[in-house]
Length: 469
Image (cartoon, rainbow, N blue to C red; front, side, top):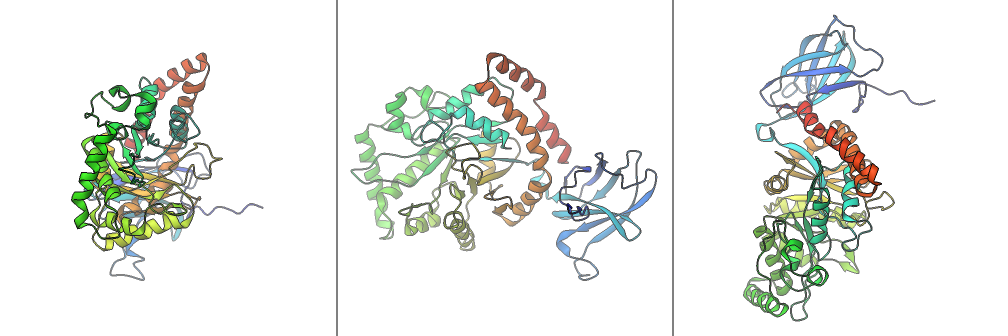
């Protein structure tokens, strides 16, 4: 016998549609509760009590100093639902409990946000993943389609050493009416400086030109130096020969060495700083990736990471990503909070660092980022992350965990329970049609274009329904 669901304690009551789910502090909002075909709970025309329960304050009968449960009357409408006006006065989750006498018949959740989050919608995505452009297992256009199916609003192609695979993905879909944003990028690996390696992994997320192609390397060897392969708009800085690059990096290392601790190597640090500076010049986001990845030893020495955290030349720290063992993401999470306590404040992101976009890859879905942004567009996403409107999400198993600022973590947790399941239903279909367009027969490709043209705009309408902005 299957256990009976407890609707009062359920976080995903499929029998009702509640909107908006997100309201703005100190604004009167009408909360609509519409039945969705389950067994009727309420009688049209009958009056019920609705109790607005502020979660943060505790129960008022146990904690009268902070408890905030308020009651009002609500009449069931002809549909068997309600239209309930209320003004919420604190940023937090609220329960709306529909009462018949002393019995709670149903409970629904809404979230109130402060004014600064008004107009910032949650977009979920990935800032670090690979394709056949380097060591990934699927072509760039297939990877993008698959991750759209899985619920992503945006993603980057960040192949090792090369930028042009991200342009391939962008150009492949540029004529389709998509609500999915493909971000150009690369993982930066510059050549040795007089034999001294820099193996710190850095992601160029959204930069308008390739950092790898600023000197000789794999990008040059594979597609040459034509700007169409190494820049978003056909414009990029002059390139350096390998000799010029080595001389410039050594000069920078010599200049910075006197101020470095003895435990920090000058060449890798100087090269890192140069890469991050160039990413910013390219209007991108420079991400310091997975220092606690284990390759014989930690990928980045602890002393080097200490100094990076103290000086943070990067724009964002990849606090989650790449592997499912605790020593990587767990240790990086602990470090983030310890650094924050020291006053070292920087934005964070979570990424899969995926090398295969199918569930057979155990790391295909381990981490992601929620960005609270005015729009799902490259520049807006980057600006929002830099302004600290992002949280990293650990999805190693079904019990997700979030890392970041407390208020955004609480808000993100609510959204993952109440908004994103609805959102993912729509993104799946768009991703399926992207894949059909990429790899279907000519007839299937034509059908995909027709259907995508017909359904475009659904995600925007959904946001406008569930967010009272």
